[in-house]
Amino acid sequence: MPQRLQRAFSRDAGTMSGGVPVFDVHAHNFLRAEIDQCGAAGPEYGLDDEGVPFFRAGQMTMRNFHMFNGPQGSYTARLELMDELDVTAQLVISHAVTFFYREPIADAVHYNRVRNDAIAEFVAQSPRLFGAATLPLQSPDEAVKELHRATQELGLVATYLGATAGDRLLSDPAYEELWEEHARLGIPAMIHGNRGGGIDSPALPAREQHNLEVVLGYPIDEGMAVAHLLLGGVLERHPGLRIVSYHGGGMIPYQKGRLQHAFETQRAKNPTPTMRPFAELWSQVFFDTALHGRDSLEFLLRVQDPRNVVIGTNFGGWDQEAGLLDELAALGLSDDTIADVSYRNAARLFGILPEEIEMLHGGQTVAV
Image 1: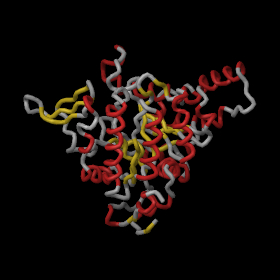
Image 2: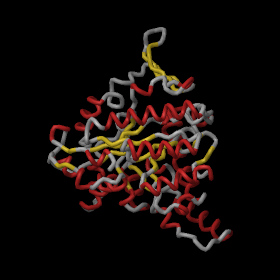
Image 3: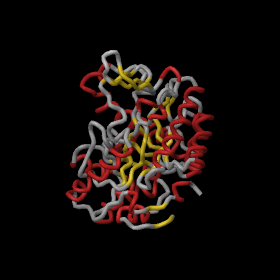
Image 4: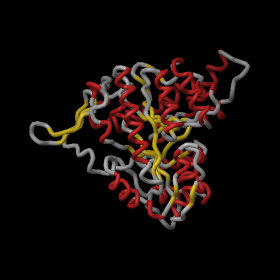
């Protein structure tokens, strides 16, 4: 039995009362254990010549970066902010800057093992926290091995993957076994933008100014990844595969009609006996709510089944969102729909009974 199902929920772990539980799937995290574990790429953390703290991942360096003081690096600060935001449970994920898909395979394998061991230990401190595994996608064989180890031995409940892996698309035939195993194990893949393959990939000039690499670049990457997985046949070949696209799926929900037309045009030219309809493939894709706008959220819930939408706050980030339950209520959604989006959908994705999150939220004690 996975370790996550052996944990006890108790009032001492930090619980909430009143309202609807919230399960946040977009909660980044830095760990001390991952520092200097990926060869020349680092990641490195320390003080520069002027005594200013910095963080380096590959060729990217951030100055005046207090990595372990805030909620993304401190366990105590994380739980405090979760309480402040009325977040009951979280999926804790890594960062796009540390995918390291262009690093040597041996360095990447070592780094991801260390990172996954550390995140398993981190989330084990509280039943409110669940972990997502990172994988060395530059080696599909090693990625499959780490998928098995991280989920079946460490108890991590999802994978956290970049929208592309170096020069490989996620629809590359090299990843066929990886997707097959995701589906067979019931492990969802959380897809996050990563500048076309990694932080060391060259940015397009149009994305370098005004922080547009993050503001729009990541959502563009995520939408493209969904399109490739759909048009490339990955979702069709693996009906049990579930994909979560961050930042509301980027442009994909808005361009759903155009994507469906391309899909059906492609099908008409190359029909096969086992073709599944577009609607079935679309139902395998989930989107988070990190959109920063009630009108955008309302549109997302019209174009996608609300049972395929999950809460995402970008917890502790520059664009952290709060008050999402109020936004859902303002849209006039039913209580059941609000509960689905708020926590039930995420719980089911990760193989957790929604009742467990309700018990945690209410402060009851139950051994599962």
